[in-house]
Image (cartoon, rainbow, N blue to C red; front, side):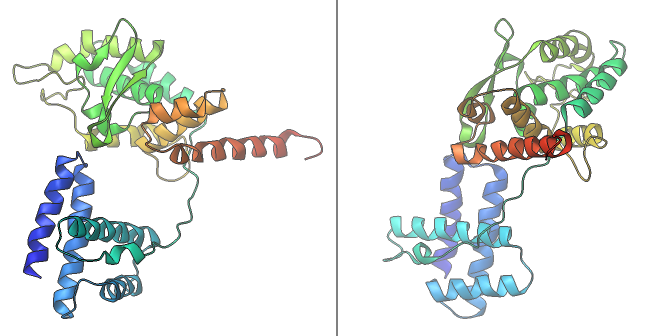
Length: 296
């Protein structure tokens, strides 16, 4: 078992080298550590029945289907890596099955409600108030591009092609893609850079597009709180940056955007991931029909 513990460290380092996100690394490490501790406590080997017993215990303790699916995925990746390394002769992960997940439709804010949010932000935005300019710039860029909040936090001024209204964004797996943005986002960004960012800038500030009043790059949590506060009145229940991302994708499709173009904008590796937004649009179409059609 000590060898497996050592191999776990090597596995995590290999994922890190491939560009896996910090959250992914933490999840894999936590899941595999939990399994190995279970095997030690139960004096079991790293084999199919023992892994299934571990998943059963976790399930009985109240783990959700999504948690079980993630843990299963972690173990499958680790066992496959052990086979590649020659530590295992056969792969027990090949016969592991993830629980079937019921995929819910993403939460969407309506165009009208978002319009009210942007009108309010514009009314408050002032060249004498750098924070208000940063808030408007943040919301406009996230909605205009559908990018993840972590991608916006990592965005540099040198990543912006101002002449063509394009951003170079680094997403999951360190993959880069180019995102277009429109006039409202361009205007908000220009105001922020010319009249807001210069007020917060310090010699220690790097090339970050968004910086705080302390002259540091704005973090993901700070951006999440900002967006959540602005979206609080647009939908029922909790809303955050992903609601804005989902809304951008759905509104693009509602107005005739090509599905593969939306896939590229969102940075989805698979078209299947993007297709959930077509379901959202169908649901909106059905709701409109049932509400408005005289023979619905």
